Image 1 (tube, one colour):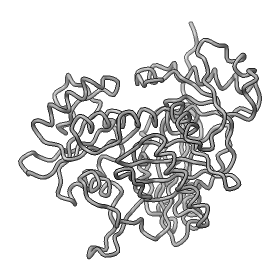
Image 2 (cartoon, rainbow, N blue to C red):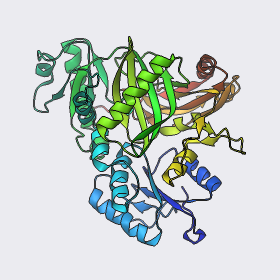
Image 3 (cartoon, one colour):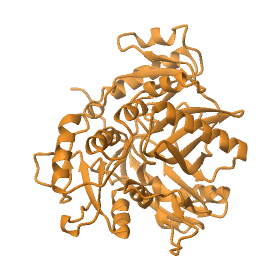
Image 4 (cartoon, helix red, strand yellow):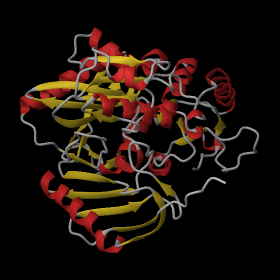
Length: 436
């Protein structure tokens, strides 16, 4: 990460992100193109003297009051003109910072609602949106007793309320499967790395009815409660469980005008129910027989390297080169009217490379073959050598990303599948430790 020097006098956008955020390099490139400066607030150790040489403000997501005070102190030295967040945890603090600085942004209350699956479900239900039945899993009640509760019907989905990316989400078709799922999620939430996050409501689990149908994602920007759709993604691989690993996002989706309008109308109603006001949103929903059910809305842009699948053009612009999602977000954060920008007409798709099994990654073979597949734009392996990998529902990351661009969504999707077959992952089983 790089923060521009104060003496440039350029407008400055503050980006709140985990130290390892994938998108920060793209934001740097976009800032260079726009001639603006960036500042960062990251969850690094405040006791170290700028270990990453990025002049970042050290914050702690679970220490909001102290973190806001640190950002305000930094603002006194290098004035911030806009605020953006990358990731769910940073979004909560970003809302507090925007409010404290008097800058446009989602309200803290709306972000708290959006980042809790339970609070969001309640808001959607109160707004009259189609919602599955749901109930909270009491921490002190045995898993088997919860699974046999007459309020629970099958199939159902058991999930933690605070984790993202389908982590810990498990379908159950019987009481026995539900009890096993509750125990498995409780074990996941008890892990030291999860508890160290200190996420509000981090121990909470809910059960809800399984929602059939095809899944879609909507990338959008809010400007004073007005929703601007940036892209609708289809998820062509079935997401029916027992785990819900997202693999391919492709845009534009093969929807007729009525179906697309129904999805966007539902997203608009759900955003209003949460109270989200200004900034990026990433919505997930399912459509079954014309009915749209919201899964969740995150008050942040699409995560990881997936943003690279999106490029935007402006018809009246003398510059024909498309811009990245990060540049569009920076323009919006600076107060520019970005409504004239539209996603380029070419179909685009990204595959989040799934983790096939638990173990240590030794090497990846076939990258060059995958890149040589027609219509493939790039292959990026983000997992590190010797990293311990875990598949869902425990997984918190992917092996990497494959990108494709084509004249049709089906051609882009097929290219991703062909490239994936070229890749081979050498993963050694983790070494077990026998008790003494």
